[in-house]
Amino acid sequence: MIRVLLADDEHLIRSAIATLLGLEPDIEVVSQVARGDQVAAAVTAERPDVVVLDIEMPGMDGLTAAEGLPGQAVLILTSFGKPGYLRRALAAGVRGFIPKDSSADELAAAIRKVHAGGRYLDPELAASAMMAGESPLTDRERAALALAAEGASVGEIAVSLHLTEGTVRNYLSSAMTKLGATNRITAITTAREMGWL
Image (tube, rainbow, N blue to C red; front, side, top):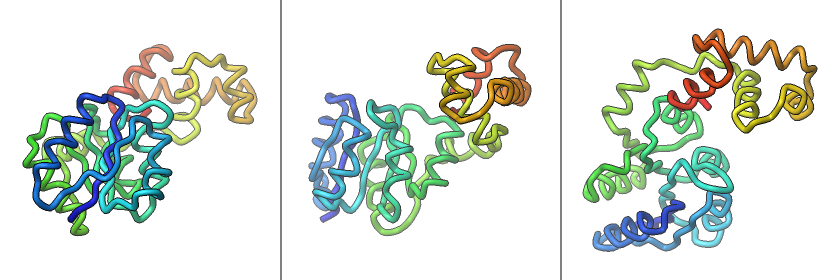
């Protein structure tokens, strides 16, 4: 029996997925959580074979939660199939990435493959990620842009990242240039659409 932990903040979707997986003879959903910051504790308590994570969740996003689960078989199930998300998931050691519009049979097959030590990547998403290329942003540029996206001022970003305001302006300007944006809002929008932020 493959023991599965489901993490998704949408109760109806999470319950429906659990019900569908419960119909599989070799899969058992042993735990469900609604927040990304609840995943690690649930993994420790339940010891699932496979963790199925949504990306967009309160408390902590699914990709960050996956980064905190080294060695754990993780499958991302999301409606946000952005190329940058796939690259980040693979860098975190995630073994599977599948869109929420997949069939229940596809999801069960992905869980089985990930449990067996293989990888399961949605072909269309994998092709999009290859075409999009890697994020042009450095870690510092991404961090500065992420804080700007939350509404932080240049001064607040400087304090948060332990940088001077001039350095923060340089990082934001560099990020805008690399993304072909004329302002921060356009840069943030572009980075989010690509899954780089």
